[in-house]
Length: 95
Picture 1 (cartoon, rainbow, N blue to C red):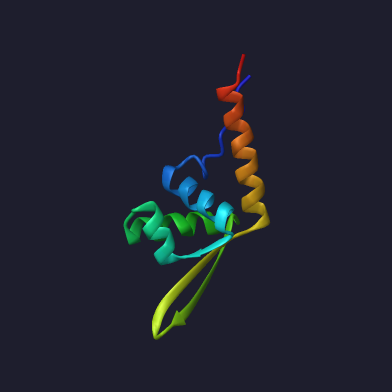
Picture 2: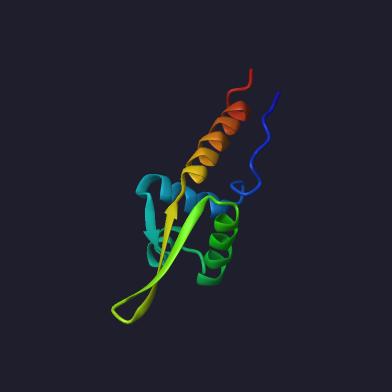
């Protein structure tokens, strides 16, 4: 009947982050904040959850003497996103 929705991706902010990364492959923390309009603390927590699930990789460096966090989509993250979209289709297009 209806497919189970991935609880990691079913969060609005985590889904927004993954969706951004699907289109851009990687993004820095400032770009994620700009697009999602979420607070730094909330973004940080959600990135940690996505990283723990293996959906993103995080690289912390310095850029012009400022901390710079780069977040990149992993193949596992892309696969999870594609499965999530297919699961959503079972809700939308269910006869």
